[in-house]
Length: 166
Image 1: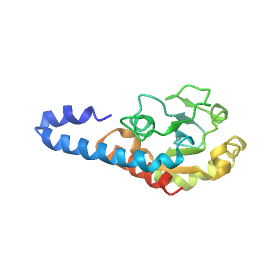
Image 2: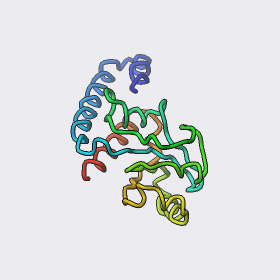
Image 3: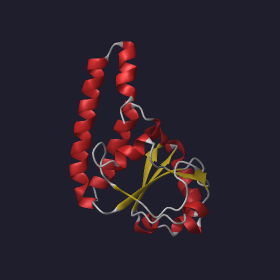
Image 4: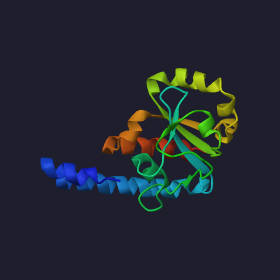
């Protein structure tokens, strides 16, 4: 997950600082994993949408996916295994209709949050998703998927704060 840090830090001569960042982040992830054991067994889907009409269900290879679902390097959450499409590729509303996650983290441009949610509420497919019916749609800004240290920190805080309140 943090492969970029040692490499990048070596280039600019900040390896020691990078190791501290990694160590601190791993401690926060471990703390978050422990705190989220209360929702163990509840499934989670990470869905990116720029426009409320096309969707990308994040899968392996995405840093936020690793953060959320990896049992050792991440929070150890349970990924939704009902999605029948191809992860990390854009699809339509119909493409996400098989998702039955208990929680959806909807990743979009935070400045367009209201517009995005208004688009989604117009769709029967969206309104019939399990997480939507349960009121378990959680918003996250697209900056979370960039994979840098601040992005991972933001995603970690967003996921742990949101799910830790349940």
